[in-house]
Length: 99
Image 1 (tube, rainbow, N blue to C red):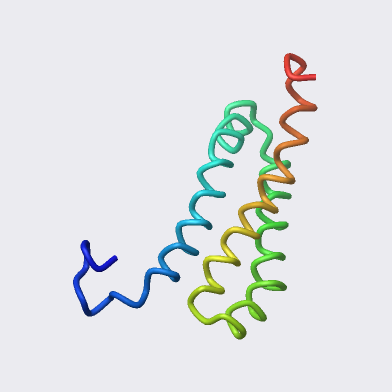
Image 2 (cartoon, helix red, strand yellow):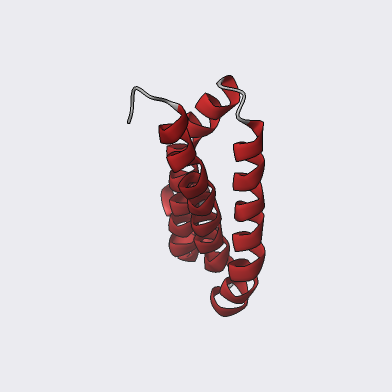
């Protein structure tokens, strides 16, 4: 962080790492999400978004209250994980080549 943004942001490496963790989980779910969109599985995608929202609200508020900005990264990882966990089994079930 110091190299990219300078000394002013030197102490924020942990926060950047947790935000990267959230985005890493999101990147893992993008192919499943795109595949479900191509297969016109809108209902499954909607359920995954509701699960993601529920986790973000239920877990996010305490995590942000406890860990501050790092809690945002943890919340992102959990919420995107909930969406991927909802979409993954539906994707495997709807695609016979994976079963």
